[in-house]
Length: 140
Image 1 (tube, helix red, strand yellow):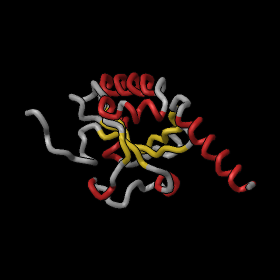
Image 2 (cartoon, one colour):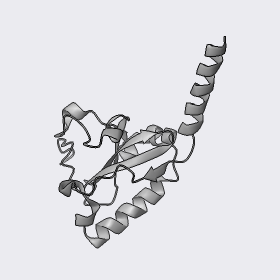
Image 3 (cartoon, one colour):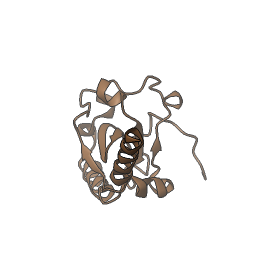
């Protein structure tokens, strides 16, 4: 019976965290990964990106899932990307990977890739040109 209670408690904790506003961490950010470094973006793109992250930080994980079409938010399927093995960072690699569109940045192409755990989105890569997970253009 005590294991059942422990399981319920951990499930309750997970549910509470998914209803908590997202916070961002740059603990696993890979600035040496030249292709995906924010420092290579122009001033306007960087400012708009930070504005977007600020907006997203008012959302919960469950809000992002519910509005996933708006934010193009979803779990990364590495087999469909150009990085089949995932992140280089071992700690980030152990967590579920997600991507978010940075609306208003580079004609809606820009994305941020990171790992999620317990209410925290760990930013790993910034993808200005949507190169990590290329998709066919729609409505063109």
